[in-house]
Length: 447
Image (spheres, rainbow, N blue to C red):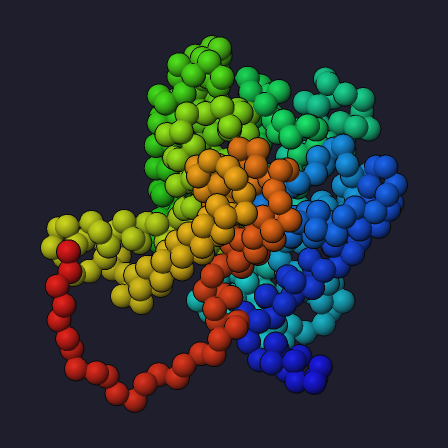
C-alpha cells in the first residue's frame, strides 16, 4: 500500500511538490510543538504550531502568535529555516546537496525542478538552481549587513545581528515575519529611509523571480532582456507607481496613516505600501486604519502578487499582463495578443485565464467560508483571505482572533496559494491525452 502511494506520487512532478511541501510542514509543526521552542517552555497548541509552520513554508507571514513574544530563539531559528526552505523550495536545497556530494541530477529530478520554477523546459535548469543559490546568499547577506548596521543604533550588537539576519531572510523570501513584537510590523520605522528602502529592495528582488534576476545580472554581457523579464519589469513598475500614487492620494488626509507625516515621509510610506502587497507582508502603516478604498486596492495588488519563479504568490504579474494584453487586443479588434512586438500563443492566454478563474474560485470560496466562521466585516475577511492566498501576510488584525475553523480555512488558502491552484489540480488529477478528434465549431453570443 505504502509502495503504491510512493509510486503514485513519484509519477507526477506536481505531486512530488505538493507532498514534499506537506512533509516539510509536518516536520516543522512537530518541531514547533516542542516545549523548547516556546519562550515560556510550554508546548504550543497544535493548531497554532501548524498555522505557523504552514505560514513559514508557504512564505506568507500571517501568524496567530507574536513571533517575538511567544517563540524562543530556537523557535525563531526554526521558523527562519522553514522560511528559507519554503522560499527556495525543498528541491532547490536537495539539488544543492546533490551537487555538493557530486551526485548526478536525474531526469526525474530535473522535471521536478522544472515544475518548481515554472520553466518551459529542463534545459539549463541545474545552472538556474546554482544561480538561485548564489543570488539568494548574496542578496540576503547584503540585506542582513545593511539592516544590522541600522539596528545597531537601536539595540545591543548581538540583538542587532540577529534582527538583521532574520529580517533579511524573511523579507527576501517575501515571508513578512518580523521580530518587532506586538504585531506592530515596521510601523516604528515609517519615516526611516534605511529600513524602508532596504526592505523594499529585498522584497522586490525576491518578488521579481530568479529568471529575471539572472537576466539583469547578465545584462552587461548580453545587452538584452528576455520577453519574460521585460514583461515582469514593466508590469511591476506600472503596479508600483500606480499603487504609490493612489495610496498617497487616498491616505493623504487620513490622520491615522499619512496626515501626520512630512511630504517626503508620505511619499516614502505610500511607495512602501505599494511594494509590500506584492507578497512581502510587512507594513509601516496601520493597515486596519486605512480607508476602505485603500484596503480594497491592497486586496487587488495582493491578488496579482509577485512574478513567476519568485518567492511570492498571487496569480503573478505575467498572468495579469497577458490578460490585460488580451483585453487590449479585443478592444482594438485584433486576433493576436502582442507584448513588446511579440505575439503570444493562444495556449499562454488560455493558461492565464485558467489560473485567474481558479484563483478567483479559491479566493471566493475561502472568503465565503470565513464569513460563516468569523463574525467580522466583509472587507476584513476578504483582506485576510486575499493575504493568505497571495502568500502576502498583511493583516487588518483578524488572524490572531481567528477561530479554530477559521485557522484551518486560512491554512488551506496559504497552502493552495503557495503551490498554485493549477499545480494542485495537476497533482490530484490525471492528465488527459490529446484527443484524436475535434468537435464541430459552435457559436454563442458573448456580452
